[in-house]
Image (cartoon, rainbow, N blue to C red; front, top):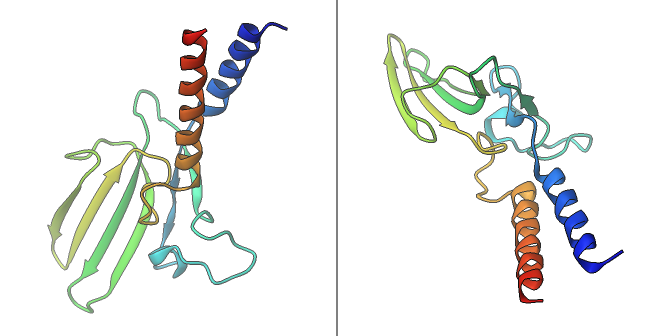
Length: 147
């Protein structure tokens, strides 16, 4: 097998690995499960920060995105966090806005990256892997061009 063909096969495999069929978002409600509030897991059987990560598939022509809603109740000063998929486009994407309702306030944040409605880390393991793969792919392409 020639070197050029090997590089082409490697590039095709990397491209296949990087393709994603569905966006994955955290889906949980802190009212039902306290772990959802911070995504810190204290049980040995659960994976930290990934226990609620679930596929969000498009609905028709509407692409899925991730949503995090913080609800603050005025009467009892309770707050809840709901992490979910969204399909109906909000006022703005990849940002936060507030809604002042009778008896409660909401802070709604939307984003479109893998697991972005969860932990505060800028680059999770999956994003680091993508970054590493893109770097390797770039080095291979540069090497091919130089030869």
